Image 1 (cartoon, rainbow, N blue to C red):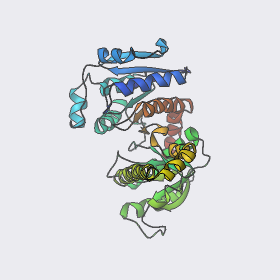
Image 2 (cartoon, rainbow, N blue to C red):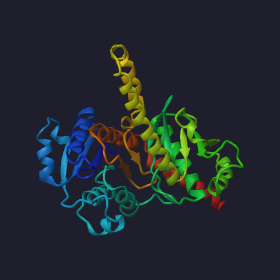
Image 3 (tube, rainbow, N blue to C red):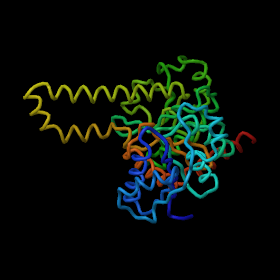
Image 4 (cartoon, one colour):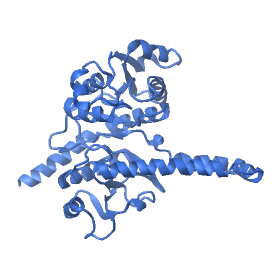
Length: 341
């Protein structure tokens, strides 16, 4: 296996394309000599952006794609009809093993459909979940699923827990990560039908460290390392997290500017405050991987800046180095063999 991680980046996706996508790619190759980026999109536009930077030329290559999938387009039709779109071309690079991973800030629906249809699921994986890292008091927690499977079944959530545990242990380095199932209370008798059906299945899993229910309020304090839920609940948690965080930062900054005394105090605490707020910046942790595919697909925010793009590309290098897909295949196969026995 090559030491070089090849990452295809959708240069046309998101609100800030192609500028922030190109800058993020440049920053990533400057940080790591073991990364090569394939910028996928309209060649002339990408080339114009690249002219603004100095970078190791052998680490960035342009792959021309003449079409772009817009956010409002029906995902299935877009993937089927726009064969030369940056999303389709980029995912085919992963499918054909030309690239190890694909990063995009584009249409979530098209990325989810394309991931399953073009890249394909690992054999035995029922549904690939989106799994972003969210900041907590003591580090980060993996929220799985946050947007891919709104109507999940109990067996899906069990697989989410297993895949999430592998990711947290081998990419983030948390040994025996704690797995919590999102619920409206700590008592086992609480919850909707899905939670009640999933709970005993997770308790029976010997290859995860299941710690029981977790309420949404306990996620920011680090109540679990892997937080399992279906996508509707996960997306609400994620968006609330982001919204409250943005309001708090705005309020804190505003209160520090209300008087001369507060402004002087702000100057004194600025370094410590900046360091603290940085730990709660979701962009520091890259994008959300779509786990369970035959190759890595990472979805970033539609408003992603170069920092998030860069961190998402670096994230792909660790994913390959730790052989996450291989580990997921092994565990899913082991579970299938146990069922057959």
